[in-house]
Image (cartoon, rainbow, N blue to C red; front, side, top):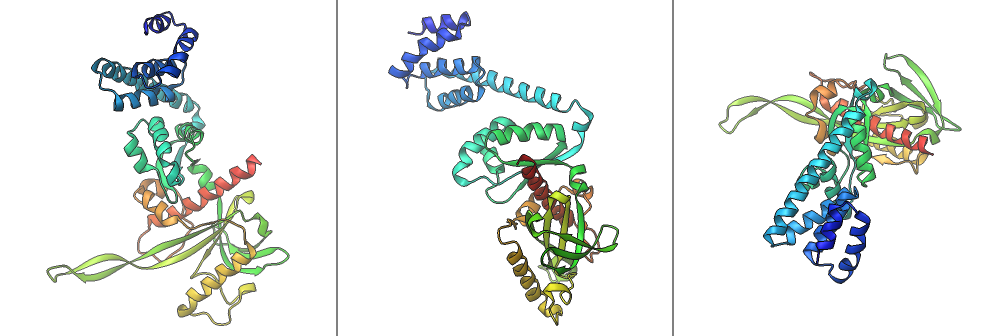
Length: 362
């Protein structure tokens, strides 16, 4: 039944193979040998993903020992080829000096109904098991995946995006180039917005912009840690670091200007400007902060709000050496520096870079 197909493969006449397999796929689509040779044809034509899917399905369904052995051999050969192509692509992607800059690759959330297919594609691109791939794909918010040479990250990122797996990559240089201004208060809201703010060197000034320039808002809760004395299970006194409170931050992203306007609940001057509140003490800061957020929502009714910082932070908070290279531009009274601060700045700047990329595409 398959002698002519085998002979056509041996003389590398893949057009003849296709012609011979076409009627067999119509009359005997469930025949495992027909499926095997269809997989072989996919492989020879360079349709590696289709071939891989055929071989993996056969390994689940087939009991014929000869066919199982040939399928395993074919799948191993194919996976080796895919790995070699990937390594070759990464090597080519990092040949230029600028492609060796340190960067990060972050995965965006995948809808539950798309996760099965996405996990298979992710497993193939990253050369890992599908089960492990599924665990690494985020269902909510963003997930830090890896850091390294930007050439490699871009190469992987482009493959992921082509496979329907959204992600973003950027160099630390791009991230750190985005300026962050600390907003003291909003002086005017119409016809344009004007904020009184400080730059990175603490110099005070005013910035005027159109509300339409704000592409996104990012919200973040940063833990305030304190040393407390507690008793262990034996009643012995011991010092522990506990989260005593959270600092609230709201970033207004202006990607066209390459900057972020950062608002902090405890440093915003509520008694000044258009959002003036006659009396604001510690007990009413939360009420005042919520009123400020409501005011911003009125000015920016259709601007996306990114509030999934905490899930993202949990995936990168242990990357201490990486986060040390990202100035946080956050000034909280801390005994020691916290990676949470730089993680929030990374989150905001990546959202800003994503928005800037969209502007460039238009």
